[in-house]
Length: 196
Image (cartoon, rainbow, N blue to C red):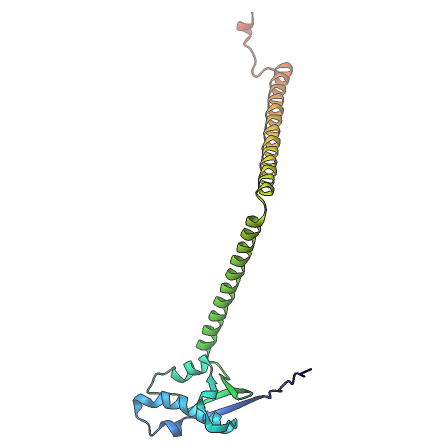
């Protein structure tokens, strides 16, 4: 029997403040931010001990990239604080402290993803229900439809009977009040001259 051997991958987390000014100063203005991105990668290759100095093994987070490009191609930040996670050979870099604009943007995108997930789940449940109804034999579907129509008819009959009872009760109370009023007292007095 062959035994499975599990390779344990070390997970290393660190925080760095990466200086960018010194490396970006001699570069022409229109290349400063791309040089800043490359500087971040070079710094992490050196500090996270990546063999062969391969820059492709470093994955920059979307929000870190936006923070570097925030002021455009000519004015990258002077320094940037990052959180680094190394799993095996791959190094993932995230922005440590997000500015308010990026926080709001991230929250908005998370909400969108959440709503999209909810909509997707609803669609899946609707599709499953449709499949279940398609899989049932036609006789069962016909029996269920008959039951539904019978229930609707019963409900409508009960409602009609209730309305008839209400009308009858209203009529009897109306007549009772009219006759009771006549017996007890007339609406107005009859003039004596006309009464003779």
